[in-house]
Image (tube, rainbow, N blue to C red):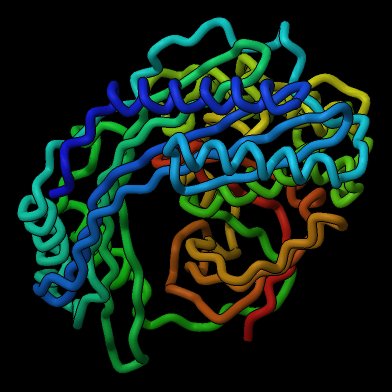
Length: 446
């Protein structure tokens, strides 16, 4: 096991280093400065076919300094947060700033926007896990999957557990820090029949190790998902309803958020430029974030600019009501920051949820997608084309697995064609959503 991680001590040390960096930047001529520092420690183990494959004990740290000299900006970073390294990083950042062009949008977020409410959001739950215990859990997970009839071999099970501290400070006098933890366990298995081999996986992840799904259950679920893929065929080609399983539907939300991110908007690299107020979804659909949700995977009281995070509604009754902006991107667009430097935090959906069976019945005949491959998404045009695997649906019931096909459309058309959202919420990440039923897409198969 790694040496004990004293989060409180590390937090105090990083805060002190950040303050030192800010004082040095001011002394050397910076008009303003900001510092981000972090330290993370964890353990990761992987096993395969009942044998230990890797054991990794990690400890990473880093510090990044950004200085502003007038309208000029310079940034430098280091993986060493010692006093000598801080001196070198600040000097390097100032040197860069003096050689860059002026940028009217450069600078810290406004002082009055700095976070003042810094509650404990219950996101730090260390796991006193020895290396032997981590290995045992991974072996237990894999063994549970391998014991299921029909599983031929394993690609392995992996367990990771880590905790860390992040600190952000700037010359407005703001200093914020947060301790956090993340633990996960996964298993990947292979099954085979006369038609060939198939593989699939399952995983669990949580801030608190007590919230992880049991190791045996993860292995068994991985086996069930793998066996369900045996006998896969290519689906028919045509314009068909497509249902995105909850495990992949979050990707559609991710594509939306990328399109309304300030960086894409001011670069005019988004199909949603100047679309604020437009109807993008059915009127029963609302998408919002809850950054102060206790214990959630993406909770934080301040963003990467030190701005107080807040509940934001991005889609309200189908309409695009807010972009996702940092202080810099907001200035470039002539708008106000939404407290989203670093992205959205804890995205949630409000909609009339339906059961998975109800969505399948509504689909009638089409494809249920459980896996997506490739990166065929054009953020500028919204065009969407990806390889997929899943199940063929006929008369509202799953018939057989399908693979080696492509689904295609345009994101704006997909959003408007959202016919229903499932109650089978996948809550393992920062985006909580159930399955999505899209009324029609192009399916290119046999």
